Image (cartoon, rainbow, N blue to C red; front, side, top):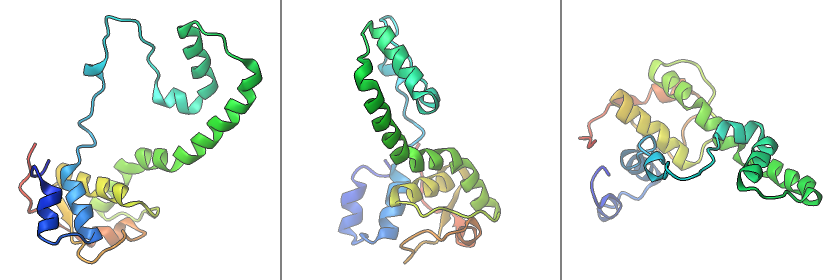
Length: 168
């Protein structure tokens, strides 16, 4: 974390506006430091599921999982399950699109390229600001900016050098 009790420290300073919360989250989060591999007991049987495969070939992956677990699939429930899986995919689509487009969005902001940005929840704006701070040494002048603008060029105009001391 940027500093151990950052949420309390920022609240004690009265920094509770959305632009302050976005910056605190951008400084505190570590979205690229998570690895599940140390938590997997590779000496035991496990079935690896590739997230891309799960998204693009959900039915095939589920059949593989059932086969791996040596379970019989109830074919009477399969059609309904596919409908539920389709609704789940639709809900996840915006998050997946953000994940795929994140590197290009950050580069467009850094270089001032024209790129229409989607309306994003605060956590996605924080991830972008995190990338600017930690990967490019830049920050955004976001005082009184409740939502990111709709184009990367507008965010580029708000860029400044990062002044926060960063912890690894």
